[in-house]
Image (cartoon, rainbow, N blue to C red; front, side, top):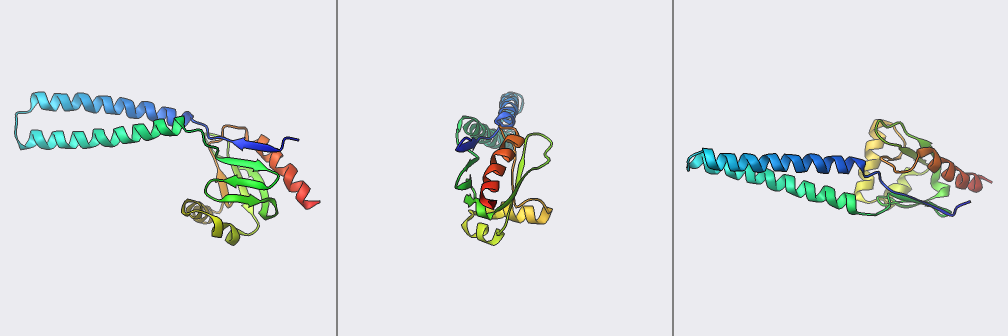
Amino acid sequence: MESELIIYSNKKAYKIICLVLFVLNALLSFAFVSVKNHLSAGLLCTLSQVILIMLMAGLTCMFIYSLYRIARIAPMAVINQNGIWIKQFGIIPWNNIFEVTAFPAPNAPSIGIQVRDAALLSKQASIAGKLIMFESKMLHCPTIVIDNLEVNSQTIISFANEFIQEIKQ
């Protein structure tokens, strides 16, 4: 049995977002040149240019962030004999994990992790983790949902279930 499974995010969504942002930014650049050439100098021209520059700056920032997310090689989760490590929650020991199941998601493989003691998990969670727990409570789904996985969800579930069975024995 492998001792550790490292789970990375599927980068496909960020690549599509990056392409869309690039095209939108190019279109805004052409619109900026068009406004500058066709409107006479005045308040309307200046106001239009300022709005277009602000939109272009925002899209450029989102484009750069998308590139960063594509280039970043950080795991979403790590499963080993100690438990499951998730960035927003830290390490969740196997004795606090009740169940790991497949979670239905339309675009990519997802897993749901049901914990025994959500209050204990909440104490060690970051703010982002607490928001995830609040959302899952409102939607009546597993405590933690990890989606957009690069690995098949059944592979992760079978790997995690081996550790859960060891704890039960």
